[in-house]
Image: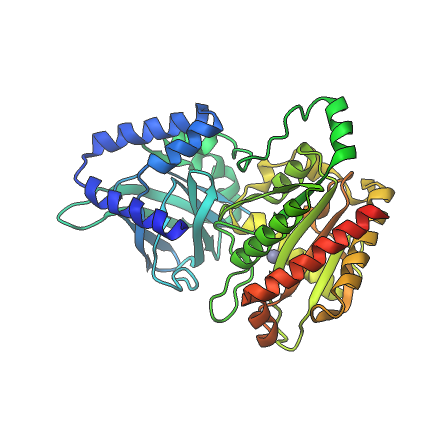
Length: 436
Ligand SMILES: [Zn+2]
């Protein structure tokens, strides 16, 4: 259904192409201001009517001193471009763009660029993240309008600099066009997937009575949008598998009538890690389940693994995995320097002991349930410092469904039947957990 939707939109993009630059400017201004001020229902409607420009190709030119990045877009669009440190990156923020670049684009680099990623960053907002091998500054950026059947081009020129100059100039590096200055400065909207607002949620009495009646399960499909997560050699993406499993699990749980089920993302949108935790807390979750799939260098490693939070990792592999998963925000170009709020400041040791014990008990229940249902990892329950498991008051686990780097696991992960099987088993474990 999603594909059809995009096709329809790109048809519109073709029809509308003859529009002039001024009209586009006005259109983008309207979209941006509507997006900032509109209530969610209007926003959803607007999103359906909105014309989404299509990015068809991108290329790199230049050398290790000066590198040019060019992306072809069906029409001129506004943008904001700036730089980030740790690691050094160039971020290009755009209104929503339908990326249709040839497969494999961005996996290799040239000049100062080691590679780039692109995708939806938050509703109505797309992003390109360019990794650089050294600190860089933006020399020039512009949009060349479409002309003579040639698409519009967004051009960004970067030049090599030293660390000192980078940090001195990074704040003044923001370059924008067509009203995107505003867009670049407004905070990332908190994702509110449809139907997630629990009426009267703020009233303590309601919360208590709701708690007695129904438990709230927060399902967190990992990655999304610009962050694909693990990708297997055949191009199967972690973010798609985990969203599919999350949807199946949600359906099964809803059918029981015993649970409120909310998902941190309902579509292919990127959600920062701390926003996932905030979402769970805001919605008064009773249990938080983050779903992932992984790849490792050793292709023989396989099986489902459950992770819970711990300051000290249970083993080197668990530590490495947590490091990898915690990089999600960096991959998506989130400026961690600007993102220090309550949740990120919560230290692992502040996590209530009770929450920790409940998390461990739930993880063990799931592992027990999975025996005989699917292949589980040799060490099926491990501990590490996953950022997404840091809600101090909600028992939280992370399920690594399996390894895309293992042929047998990859086959299971691609099977709808297997996804149903594992979801039914997890749902049973949720029942058991709340019964005891
Ligand atoms: Zn993952």
